[in-house]
Amino acid sequence: MKNDEIRNMEHGLAFTRQFAKQQFQSTVAMFVSAALALFVTDAVAPGISGLGLAIAAATGLSVGVWCQPNEYRSRNGSLTLAILLIAGMWTVPVIVLLISFFG
Image (cartoon, rainbow, N blue to C red; front, side, top):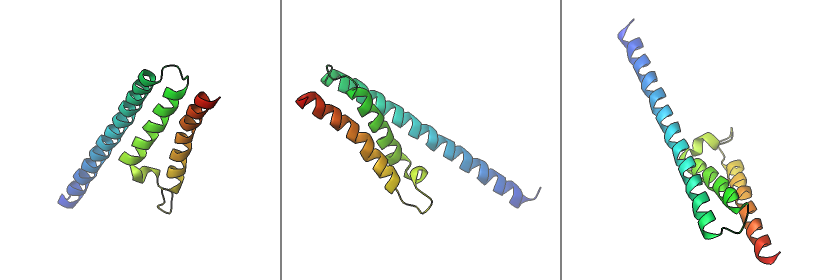
């Protein structure tokens, strides 16, 4: 092997390790934020069923998009679909809150 090939291989391995580390950190951040949101919501509003899970899911997705926005981009580089998905995910807890207060 030539020195250039070895250097390219080492660069590729370093890039792969860095990518795996970023993915792991993003996954941990999503899980921890979702678990924390679930526990806080259940402690603050224990009588509203389903609210904790809805907020945990919306929080996990929001943190995931915030940590790794390039993973959620469309082919043309837009985050519009991810933002619409986050808005839809946050709409569910708002509806649950409104139903519990007024219904």
